[in-house]
Length: 92
Image (tube, rainbow, N blue to C red):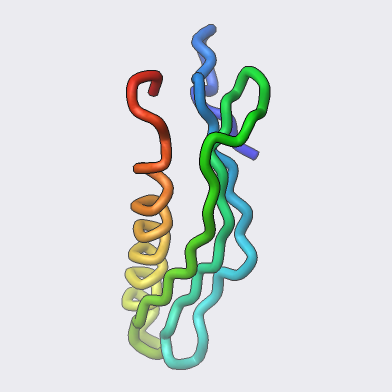
C-alpha cells in the first residue's frame, strides 16, 4: 500500500485502495488489467464507493515491446479514468 501525501501533516480525507487480480500481456500483445477498487474515508475506513474494472488493450506482438508498454499504459489510464470520478468532490 502506498499512502499519499508521504510527507507533511495534512492527512487526505479520502483514500483509494486497488486490488489487481490480473495484469498481463499475452503472445499477441493483448494486455488485460482486471482490478477491484474502493474509495474510502481515511478517518474511519468507511467505503464511499467501490467498483471493478477490466481493461483490455491491444498492443503489437513481441518483440515490439514499446507497443506492449503503450498498451499497459492505456490499461492503467483506463483504470484511473474509472476511479477518479468516484472520489467525492469538495474534500479532495
